[in-house]
Image (cartoon, rainbow, N blue to C red; front, top):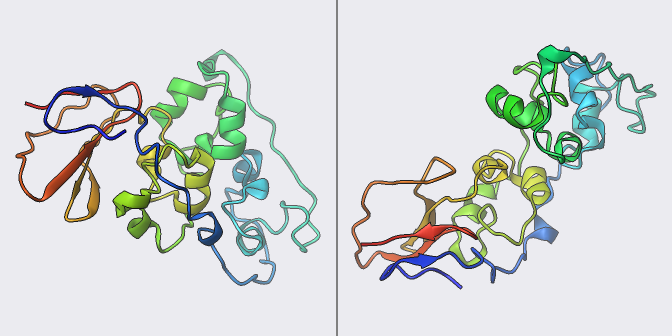
Length: 226
């Protein structure tokens, strides 16, 4: 199921055989803290985009950043949600999944302004670029991502929500909804992403040698090797 680097081939189920064995160990464990004295200035936008219900953040984080806005965290908060601005200046959504992305994946707070405008202009209207909630991820994420046997970020088995919840920083490229044709190489038992663009990816020539053991591409992508 992995593409050989001796010929041109279609990617077939990138990492389709990777077994998702990290579920039991990828949750972030942080001891609950006391309720903070007040909400973070950007809390109203975070709450509107699902911060209080996002499993990527622990109760301790919600108590620290939004104690007055997140309900059911032991701080006696009453939820307040700012109205979503409307109007032609906001543009329109180009993907029917924007509601789910905003609620589950934080597209309105974890993606660039250009990406939000391209995909979910109406849903994310009025959310400032600076309103991103703090990134929290498992300290083992870089090691998981670099392991060719269980490539956490590049695996097609792990959902976008799995990656966002556990490794939002390390897997930020793969969480991006347009990251569909990245090229990866495995050398010396370390997996490395060779491309930093999503579509029609071109990279500097890779010289085949004894250290490069495999090259991977995603579903529906074509890898040409010469």
